[in-house]
Length: 111
Image: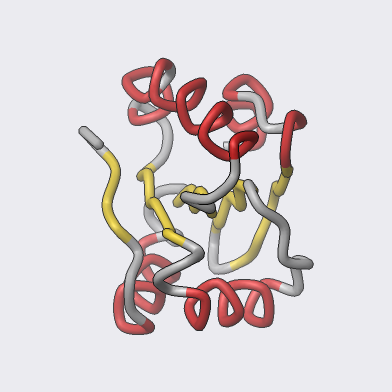
């Protein structure tokens, strides 16, 4: 996925949080087993260039990295959903949406 960085470790999550003080960071939590998640991912991919102008993009595979997903939920006090986007700014979750509520314009407005 062009412009998307894989979020697959606690170290990468910590680096993402630090980077959020310079630029908003978007986490997309994706289940490779979910049709809704695939549909939402396709919509986000169509908006990748527009989103990448305002935020750094991170992709979290929930099936293979559930421990990181759990850490995200705990660290940012955001209940686990799939699919889900969480926008991190200045070390805090400032926007989150799940399922069909995930819209590029909502992300851009919060950024």
